[in-house]
Length: 282
Image (cartoon, rainbow, N blue to C red; front, side, top):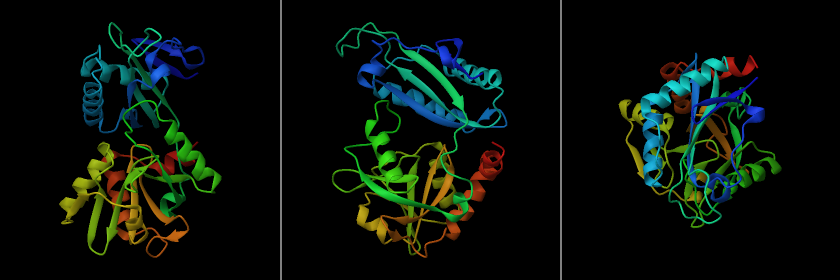
């Protein structure tokens, strides 16, 4: 029986409820951080908590728990669900209020939820993903209220793909539905500046630099992706994933690149994750 943690209480997921007047439902008013657990512990926990509090502060959203309390709540949620491997969300909504958007005098609602989530079949982590580009008005993965993200995933599925590359209205790369993008042209690696990097992507940024790669962080247009020789998506949900085809165009040789393969091995060693083995066990 799956349990979720809501404001200090563990509740059967089938009975968990939020008021219809919660601003997270009415306005998508809140923040959300995705994380992966391995061997019963949250990978890169401190970095995820830092991101959570930073995102909340940007939205003037008060978190009524200390980082230590949330760390204990996360561990409690993993233990009660007997969850050794999985993917979870740490969510804060503005809380229940009036009919309008006035945020005063509301008490934040904190939710911790963890389950199995494997966005891609394990064999595609070796062979690579076919993707399509989808235009969005914006993309900030730490916020609630992302109907555009669901639409992007739906568009990809309708076109026979499991992932979408997100593009803003000006044609700039925003990442993917499951993470952020890195691309290689010749010896140069680029990280599109319009996207946000979760702790897993920041781990790969650091690894590239430690291996002597000069990583450029700058705006990248969609047209530049078609010219890339290697593209990888990186995020908490699936780690490092090669992208080998975009909008019908092969990326480089149409196979997973050498650096992407090495990056995935590094990520598995650094985080203790084994997506292939864990996914095949379920």
